[in-house]
Length: 232
Figure 1 (cartoon, rainbow, N blue to C red):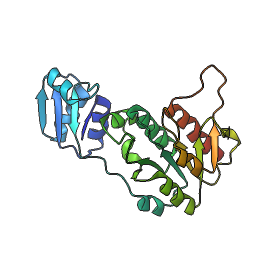
Figure 2 (spheres, helix red, strand yellow):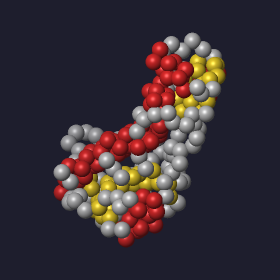
Figure 3 (cartoon, one colour):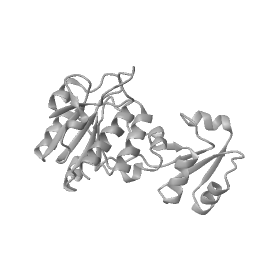
Figure 4 (cartoon, rainbow, N blue to C red):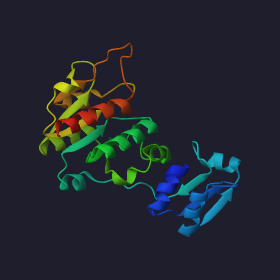
């Protein structure tokens, strides 16, 4: 997998993560980063800005790293850790939203993030860059069927809280003190019908202005910290 951006490169080099190759734009001037690269003893390849632009699907800031693909965890591994708070993403499509949610989950101490394998953005360079180095500290599970996974979580004592505007209650009125699986729906269509029907509670965040919805990562942040607040 190719990842890019100076902050991500700095994080990975400082953590001594497995990097197979470093690609640098001719003339890149970053003394701190250049020193980390020199000390890493990792093979370096130099390319023109035009060549770098072709490789990176985004702003690379003059550096691209080749690293192994992200290794997802299994549900069995997660459940063995006896988690009490997981976040389920119901077909999030924007990698920036996914990366921002990963960052919030890591900051809030969420035990794991669960995503579907199909019609959901997977961990890629943009997700890694947006998560700003927190990806390595977050367990992510990729599953074939969200409804079956929700059933498994319920069997393990979880209450499932979905997010939607219709047929819902104020998010502040729910008791989050038990094991919680929080579902964040797709940016455009929200939760799928079967996932919504599998939820124990449907929560809404009240809107007081002209806006009738929030960005998925913003909504996730509000909900995640409401769960955390209830447990303090």
